[in-house]
Length: 532
Image (cartoon, rainbow, N blue to C red; front, side, top):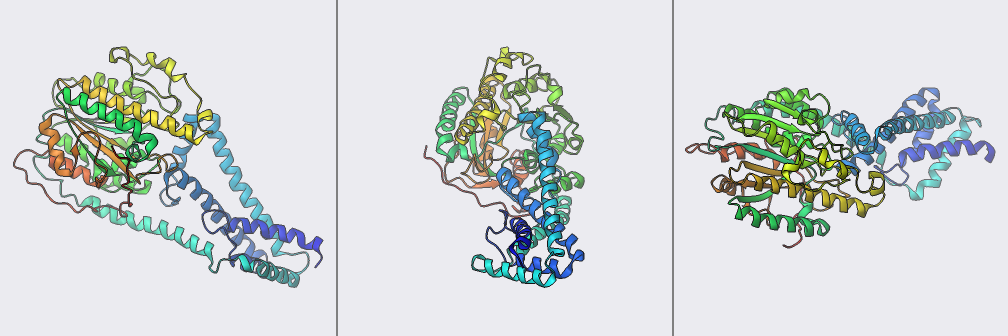
C-alpha cells in the first residue's frame, strides 16, 4: 500500500481516535481503535451507521460531562439533565446578552454536527478502503501494533459507556424508590407542628453561599469579619442567633433542588427527582405551615417566566420578578438587588392583619456572574428601585471580570458579603418586632470558585431567644460563625427538624431515618477551615 493511499485512512483513524480519547474517559489510546477499524473493514456499509452513531454519542456525552463537571461538579446524566439545557441557555443570555445565548446554542449544534459529520466521513473511508479489504485489514493491524506501547490494557471507552448507561438506569430505578418514599410521610397527620411560633417566619436562601466562606482564606477574612460585627450588632438589638452547616444536594447551580430538598424532606439531587417530587403530592414545609394557620408565600426575583410547579409546593401566593415592582435596571442576569427584594417582601406581604406569614425568599445578588456588586443604601431610599440605576451600570463588564479567575473570586467574595450585610441590616431593621429568620445557602459556587467545603452550606437562625434556642437541639452553636468542627446535617432532614423543633408544647419528637427518600448518600464533605 502506498503512503498516498494510506494517508486518508490514517487521518480517518486519527478522527476516530480523538473521539475515543476525549477527556472524560481515558486520555491514552485503547484497544477499541484497531477493533473498530477491523469491524468497519469487515462489516462494510452495515457497520458504518452503528459505529458512527456510537462514536458520536460517546463524544457528545464526554463533552457534556466536561461542561457539567465544570459547572456543577458532576457528570451529565441523560436521564435527569436534559431539562437543564434550556435553563443554561437562559442563564447565558441573562448574564452575557441574548446573542451569547443564541451563540451557545449554535455553537453546541455546530459542534455536534461537526463531530457527527467527521466521524461519518472517517468511518466511510474505512468501510471501503481504496486499497482493498486485505490492505485495510493490514493497515488496521499496523495501527494497533504502532499504538500498542501506549495503550491502556482495558477497553476504557466501553467501561465509560457502561458506567453512563448504568447511571441512567440507576436514576430510573431511584425514581421508583423515591415515589414510594414520598408517599410514606410520618409527618402527614402529626398535630401541633410549628405550634410554638407566634410570628412571621422567613426562610431566606442566599445564592451560592457555602462553607467556602469560612474555609477559603480569600473569603473567610471578609465574611467572618462581617458576621462577627453582625453578632455584636444583633446582640445589642436583643436578638439571639445560632448557626450550623447543612449538606446541599447540588453545587454550582440548580438552586431549586436545594429549595425543594429543604422543604420536602426528600433528597432531590437531580431534575428527574424534582419532577417526581412535584408529582408525588408530598406535603412540604409550606403545606404544613398552611395547615398550622400561616399565610404562605414565595418571593422569587429570579423567576421571570411562568412557574406552574409552585402550585404544588404549598404557597398561597407567588411573587416572581414582575410582581415585585422593581423599576431599576437589572444587574446583568440578576433582576434586582437583594435589598429591594427584602423591601418588596415587607411591602407586599408583611405587616398585614390576620394570620402570620411563613415565606421563602430567594436572594440572588450573589448569583454568577457576580458583577456589578450592589451596595446597601438607606431603606427609605429603596423606593421602586430607581435608586440602584447607577450601581447597575458601574464596574467591569462580565466579559472583563471572567477573563481572570482571581478577579472572578474577588467579585464572588464581595457579592456574598453584600448579601450577608443585607440580611443582617434587614434583621436589625425589624429588631423591635422580630420575625423568626432562617438564613441558609442554597449551594456552594462551582468548584473552581469555591474549592473548599464540599457541598456544605451555612445556616443561621436569628430571632427571639425563646425560639432560636430550640435550634440548639440540631447541634447549632451560638453566634453566626459555626465552629470549624461542626458536622453538617443533610438538607433533607431540615423539614422534620423544623416541624418538630417548633412544635407546640407537649408534642413529642419523632425520630426519622436520615436517608429517607434519598436517591444516593450525601457526598463526603471537607471540614478544614480558617481559624477564627
